[in-house]
Image 1 (spheres, rainbow, N blue to C red):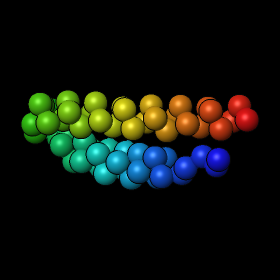
Image 2: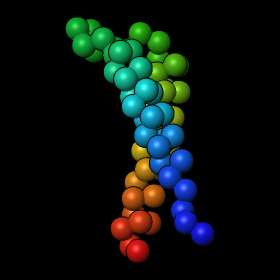
Image 3: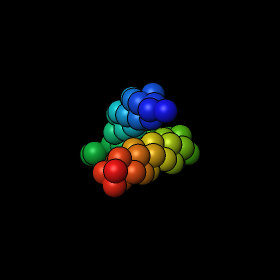
Image 4: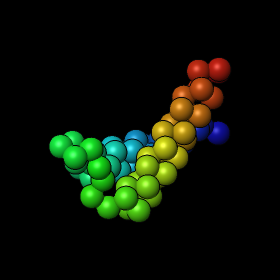
Length: 63
């Protein structure tokens, strides 16, 4: 059975959207976050999506 590409595509879209939102939350003038709690949640989700993408990339590179 062939491996599904849906989780990779989904996590890529999630990483792009959440990464953009996290970037918008940061104020470069004061070097602070507008809403620290929401930014922490965005960071956790972003890191999880990147982890899934890297894990999948390593698994396909071994084959």
